[in-house]
Image 1 (cartoon, rainbow, N blue to C red):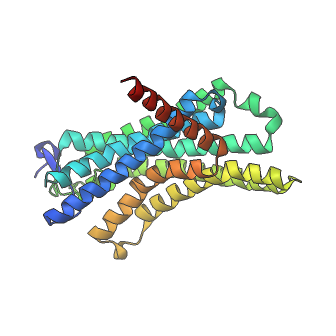
Image 2 (cartoon, rainbow, N blue to C red):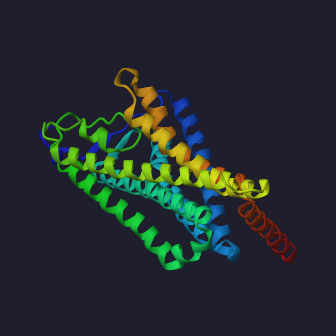
Image 3 (spheres, rainbow, N blue to C red):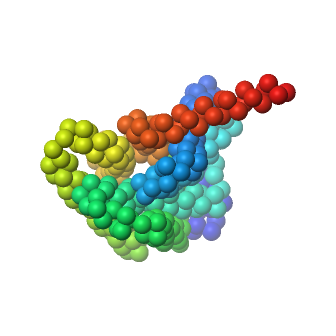
Length: 317
């Protein structure tokens, strides 16, 4: 293939060759996808319907749940369809769209986690200024900045990647479209534009990581100075879920992109890709709801209300 214009579709890496294993992967991904829909959907509904949860922390958590739902919907349904219909093809336009949206949602996820660390820092280290520093307008501005920065980053990466000539075939060694896999198909030795964007993105992500790290150093120092055990426990209960989500997100993503080439293999790459692109999005709702009593109570009331209303509806019928 001489250039990208002659490519009409890409071939994604299949999870299995036999029909039985393909169907097994379909049902496995269907279960994972439904779990993500249920968990994030319950968090979104509980926060939206419960006025007690209309606070900055839950506002950012609502944004995170929406992003997680959108992110997993970018990659998993296509993988499920390919396994079900025994195909690995994805069109050129669909691949570009998938790459853009995956980059957009995952970047927004990371930026929101950074903003949430600031929220926890202000709540614990500067509680008297919480209402001033994190008013409704400030929260909307910070969330908009996270979404806008991620959108611009994803747009630049997508445009830069697909502007390169592609002549190394159309087979992607991944179950979804991502920048490193597309670059491997390029016949151009000049990656200066994409390398520059990659270095800038890495620098921004590193700054976010440092910000999160410094925030939690200050948070733990403040928590350890709280005299009462109950106060320390309450402070930790609001911070540990966020810290666990950040650790899961960063560790899986870092291992996927920085692992040594000699331990790379198609099967291992698939497992690692699932770890960083699917697992955090499924476990985030569970991690946040495990130690958050307010959120658990709100979800419990919502489910109880649904059961009660469905019972009344069935009796009326």
